[in-house]
Length: 184
Image 1: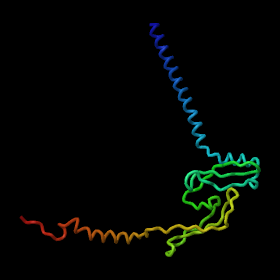
Image 2: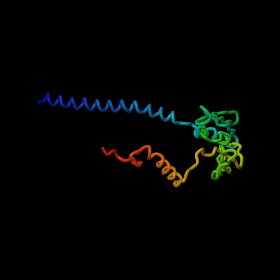
Image 3: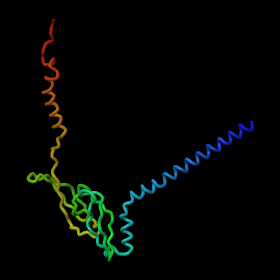
Image 4: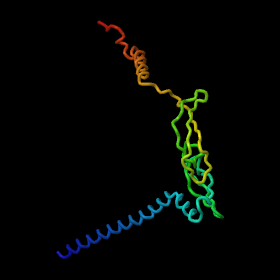
């Protein structure tokens, strides 16, 4: 009887030890992975900029243009120079945007109508905010190609479907065309 209780106690102790060991192993594997993930996601922009700002005022710091790492948009780097120190700080250029005004924030009006000669429509914007001491124009005008397809109203689409049905009905349902069934 005593041996059975000792075996049960040993079994429970071993199971508890195994559970604690497994938990510690999972914790040991998770912490470095989490720290690595945080380090990869850290873009640095605000911290690096604030470090530079602690030594220099914003007016004393000269910022270069944002240069994308790949292609012509997305994450990139810009130089920030203050006194004798130059640092590279992270920045981002939005894709599908005018690169020469990316550090200037504008408030835009609605798109104008399509110009038939140039097949473009345009809109203008007024300066709202300047980032990184950029040189910004007080107003800008941007344009884009007009939409290639004309939007149809619901009535025009319905007329098209009715006309298509009248053309396709004789092909799809030849028996309904007035052909008499065979009386054999």
